Length: 200
Length: 106
Image 1 (tube, chains in turn cyan, blue):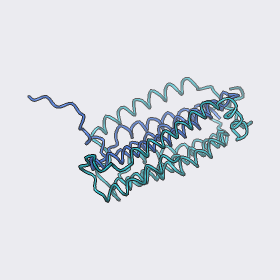
Image 2 (image 1 turned 120 degrees about the vertical axis):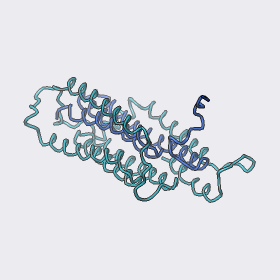
Image 3 (image 1 turned 180 degrees about the vertical axis):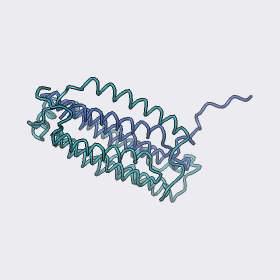
Image 4 (image 1 turned 45 degrees about the vertical axis):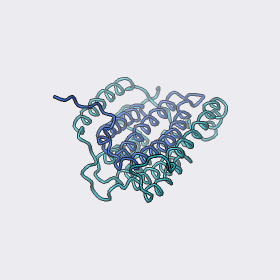
């Protein structure tokens, strides 16, 4: 908090952060407004990659690389799998947005106005000291396996439960169960996606 | 760096995700918007953790847990969406009105 500069003389880190933030925000807006479904997933890649850059700027390097590996590497690929397995149309589709779009816009703008006013007023004078890094892999791993080891193990159980749940959900129905809409061609292909999803 | 920059950015990103959740029709696009909201929360956690210099790195460890939880959530969510697509033939969230209250007969 001490040693904070004014807002009129930004440091280099702040300039880079604001520029990356504009890219992230623009990509996020395009992700939720584009009419092309596959493009939305690709804009999500840009937004999450920009967030990884911002983690690096905040000296949280371990979180940044985990973000790149898991979000960019697997979550977006899973989303693309999902889009293709649900036969998403290639090219612009007029039905990407539902009818409550104006209401959603009003709600989002009201929430943004409230949150930004509140946050800007509360933390106007707070200053992050970035001269000494605070997120290298060594100290993070140290506290992860020393202080937070019980939540870590609980999380591994939860991932196992998610894996089993995804397998159960995506299993083909047994022959005696009624399956009015399922055709053999679609059930065969849809079975592969969620099994990959649970494996993360 | 002023704390306001990451805090305001994460608030705005959260609201963009909120808009996406409310306005999108395809269930997978709704899941993408949920991912945006989770990522915004992660940025907030990391910024405040670096600001407070927490010796146990609580914010960053929670962000790591959040990323893992997001991966699990997307796996289960996609499994459910694919099952719905297989059963109903659509993933439009406003067309799945099976459980909706019946309109009163006037």
